[in-house]
Image 1 (spheres, rainbow, N blue to C red):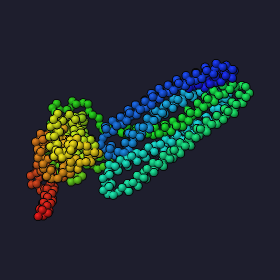
Image 2 (image 1 turned 60 degrees about the vertical axis):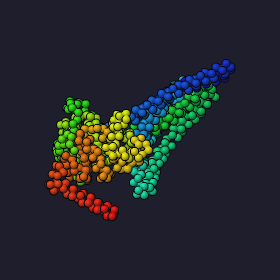
Image 3 (image 1 turned 180 degrees about the horizontal axis):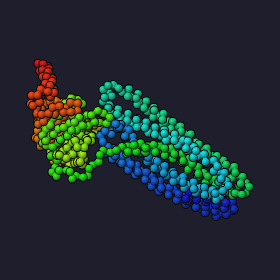
Image 4 (image 1 turned 30 degrees about the horizontal axis):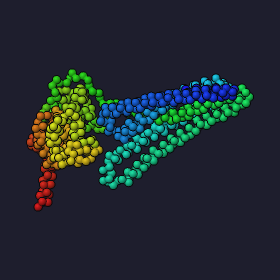
Length: 560
């Protein structure tokens, strides 16, 4: 419809010049009709093409997020959260702009150029030839600027990721920043990162600022050539005034596609740079897939017998964290694991739910290699409270029910029982909204001990066959810890429990105690047996006993 308008103008002008008065009504109405249809179709194609780009953006974002959910824990240990957030938002948006306006401009340019050139050739092939002589430099300009624009577009996106990561880390660690009075230093650091982001953007804008005017100059030269040569042909009578006006109209229509070439090149470079960063995420290998073959699984529910067979494990590019560990934990018993910092205690239990992948044939549950167990089934059987407690920003209720959405009965007894066993219920009763109290980001409204008790309630309500408490009482005082362990006595007796702690008092009543050092097990047995050996466990017990006696003496003296 747009291509028809210059032709209708040509016919109308020539008819008026010839004195056809009816043309004063006929051609304006035809032009108006073409313009209305053009507007209608332009609306429809913009809705569909931009709608397609929005749906593609949504699909791509969902795909990236799903892929991140399937990454092993080691991937997040070497990736910055802010950088991943930038790729999931800014980079996906850049790809959407390429698919939306970029694809629309390409289709528009292809149609307009082909139709305009066809009509220009019909009107005057010789004038078309001279007007297009200035166009061949365009591919050269695009080639010269394209690689630089791509490089700086990628640099801009990477710097934006660094900016996002800097902000995310500072806001997450705002307590540390303020506690050490480092606000001004962090502001200075942010200013440096932000200035670099501005510098890269300005240089990219400079490239774009040179590129775009070059397109306009080339289009202006073509218009000047047509005015000079076409005007002479009109004066000579070899071209009608209507043909001259239509020719200029079609040449003007060529101007926008040529301008769009520059814009599309810019968006293409930005979009492909962003897409390459997204592909880096999607190319990262996911965690070993869920095994669909369940023939090796026991028919009965998981009982909780655990066995480590000659297990050695190393993190990426690090020394071995575990060395030839062999340990058998019968179902239904409580196993305490103690040892020095860095001895491998947390690594050992992190392999159990496959947060890190152990070697084949080294970790077994109920006699089955955990690598053959579907990960969903494996993790449903394990209640895990790690030493690094994470709570979501929702309510206490949502956090406790996070891994077990159907656990709460109509009267909330399961929820209250789990909170009671974790010694969290007295705290909640002092809050106006109780279980519906909003915790804020990372549970900021709760103290360290309250967060640990919330995480413990989250594991208890799951009613797992295996309960792992990895230093779960480190932020809780001894009295509260004893109260929790007393409440958990009946609960623990019905399942396999692994207690990891630096306190002997936490594990002394366990059925089996394991002492680890430098990634290996050096002692194991019951509390009385280990004390009788007077080895590493005995010396740890004596040191902690002495510390307790000194602290008790200080408290007695203070009261006196």
